Image (cartoon, rainbow, N blue to C red; front, side, top):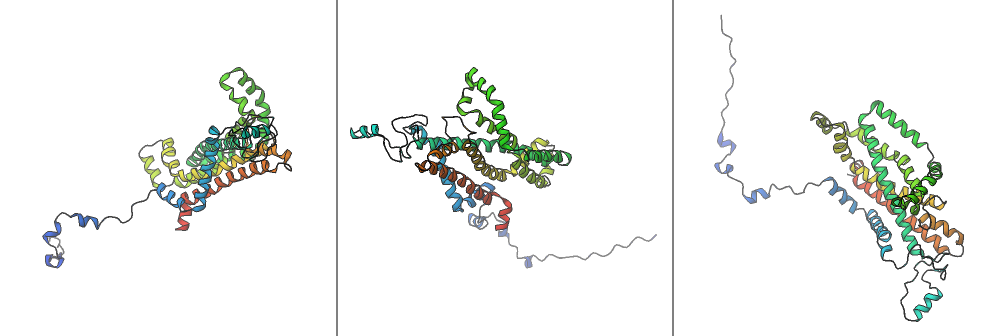
Length: 361
């Protein structure tokens, strides 16, 4: 039997001289050689690049400065201000800005220093400036607490619905649609009427809960409504982000390594949504402040004598023709706070939203 013929393979000869290889090419690189290989531009992370884009936005930076000023004015200045928000001086009612009462004028004539009423006083002789600062403290606290509640509930709910999908997503989103149809003002009034007696009795019987009478049942009802109703917008946004992220390779790799669903949602999916979460929460704060101010304006807010920007505007309506500065100061203060947070939220969205980043690059 004949052996199969093996085809002839061509032979190649390596010409060392043509390759121009020298022994010195294999020596260790010197410092000057390494410097030529250094990357000219350092790698930029998500936070560093986002903050850099934010700093290049002048409107967002000005808004951030205003937000810091409002926070200092609300939480620092009242601690050193010489007047109290609840102190009533019947000898100095309805003072105009930078005006003194007769008794204060006598003290000044005697050589004593009297701190001026920068924004005047109200009908009960209470300093308007300190009440404005304390009212902004209440409004900012409501906005920050409400934003935190919305962030926690909405992000968890939306992440679970988007990750599991299918029937779970369908049922959870139908619940969101139902919550959207619930009138929030009606729920606040119902809760206020329902909870007033048991909470008041609890505050009187247990000293730990004495703060309930100070802040008022209405404010507690507002927080309950925020927790029940206001997180649905956040949940929809997070759900949309999770639906796109769960198809990525890093989620498949985490499942292959045996990571639990809770760990994948917590450590991988929500972490990659952090920019969207920050932006959405920042934009929810002014919405919550406006809601609280509106409810306080119509009388469903903090309990007297605790001030709120909405209640200050409501009280100023009685003397709007005689003392218009009281209404204007509260209205301008509310407008500046809401405008600053909205513009800051828009700047954060431009800086951290990757879709806008692609559009502008």
